[in-house]
Image 1 (cartoon, one colour):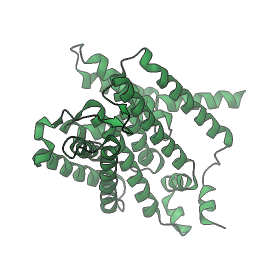
Image 2: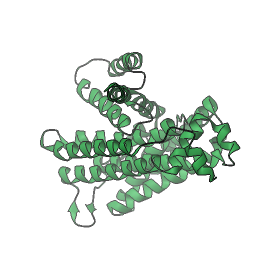
Image 3: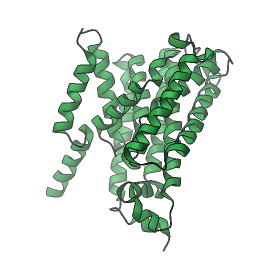
Image 4: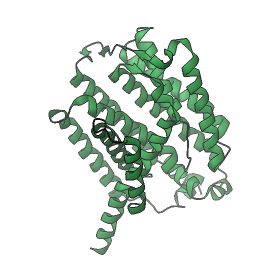
Length: 327
């Protein structure tokens, strides 16, 4: 029997109904985001989209491969620096600048994964944290990053040489398109035989090895893909906000994306989007309140963990499944 089919049988088969439901949910979210600029300031929505893609990319390794990384800020912020430098100094067009940042994040993810992927649990997390801190210190010291000032006044350029991205609405729909593309890649990945193998590795790596497969290879591919998509999110953010700064490469950013994923519900595609929306929304609306933002978000997280063990969307999904079973 083909080993991939054998691995797929380790978990409950994903029915066509579940995949269709997930696709409909994504289509509904996309429709809402298309109409959202009519009621909400586009730059705020852009921030949500960038972090939603970042959290979804991180969820690919945490929720599906079972790898807890404390170093994903290196990919997000590193790609932002490369993209900003490529657009401002090298004067590359928008598409090539974003591609340069994404490629850098993918190569960095491949290097990180090669060094860390053979370790498990807290050892893997600490190695990724240490490697990410190296990237942070390089961002502080290297001349092209601008130090604490970062790279400012990054030109947005034109999309395909035609659409002026200085128009905030055009920039929003460009970021929305990029986010949808990234989410489709993630959705296709987790619903493929490769995604089934990742889930099997998360559940029982020893059994997967006994089937003649090499879990390290699959985890490395997933980690590299996650890094590339995280970098893609960081590249879009750098162009949209015309800034690449140290904030994007600190360990706090790695912790924030973990918070978003757990808050929304890991192991689901919609969960990280929900978590990112909640965290970014809280930060935005509390920024002018004078209240301690970090404390309130931490308290909110503790309450959600105690009440919603699967995350906000995860609990809602489980509730709907239970109601269908009873019906």
